[in-house]
Length: 560
Image 1 (cartoon, one colour):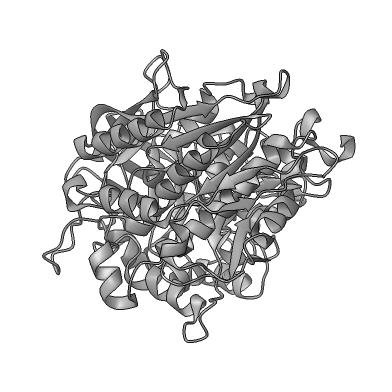
Image 2 (tube, rainbow, N blue to C red):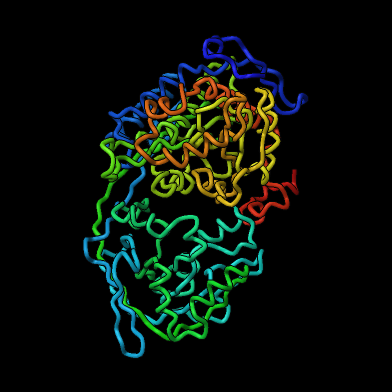
């Protein structure tokens, strides 16, 4: 059907929500999503008064209180810690001490100090307040290992006690999502092999997609990591004390004694070849100092208990992130507040309206619905990762995750993207739910971006839980609007900028399409309702890479 006008969306005219297989579930009536409610939530969450909802800020705390009380008002039960709606995430906030980063290259007894940040840059070390490492350098290609793709860039190399030099990016031969996962393991692989540091070399290929100069804009941004019970940062490796990211012009000096020059290695990349590793025959000294601050920031978690005596102990997880990036350092603009209207006030607003639809059902679905609004997404999926490692319900009872992050509500979308839909049975669920609203399910239009691995749901994927990440598609129901052009324009001009606010977006694109947000909510609701009422829990497709890497015995296609 075509998108309803806002006035129509505000009515309580019911829609039929047939879910699952007819023999398994019965038709239920559900109230339609309310565009005005979505508008109200977005206006509050993206207001200047919340100062961009930076992780750990008092303004983000206010946003969390708002979200929790909205869920409480709907009658949802607390599902956080200590019978509350909150799960506090302890974090270390670290900054690189001014003028502390040093990089000296040693070649045949000659010492050359490299300039910061023109030749290299680095961030704080999350575990050591002061580091000073001198060690030989070893080149390890892309620094990847995968039995699935017959890759071992460490074959024949001894990197124990040495600094590994690797290339940024990944081989073109790898599928994008699988490559993104393998790329995320580079630090872990080096640490497991005894390396004491990692130097990453920026490549000409990377320069085309993300210039070296762009990274320098974020030099003073603090790093964050959640803390284990013993106060140690998670996913950090104490033996890795040295780290740097190098400009390719400066990195050429690392290969002065190497059997292959860096120029020749870049030529191999242009020819789609993956270079082999070797000792570089030189050494380097890297040092830095880091300043620490301990903070905490809340996840908000609520549950609608299920109605089935057995299935109520299983949970459909709906996630969105409440944080944004706070204040801007851009001196070119007087507006310093990164309001995050689309990223991700829109996603949270749709989650809250989805919760209202569930709360108004005459009977709860069979499985329970767990609403998890996480913090620290912009700092590295921190709140979601903390929840995945400290779930407030048993991890094996979480049957699926539907994630809401940055739906672009600037045009009446005619199709939807569900990143990850091709990896699990959730693809068909999304397709059916979208069809009820007259919306098509389209394939990933930008697979090279590997977006499936880049939002909160991926922390649960790594625990074996099938997931999809929903986004507005690139097609518009309005023939006068090009949805893809509008989406691309938003991403290029407003993403992570102060202009991601309601007044600026309205001025450029016209009124925010809260009615499209209502359609998005109806689809999200029906996806979760189908999962909750269908006896068979979602499963990974047998041939999916993520099934092979993360699938569990209870959610693999082979046993469906």
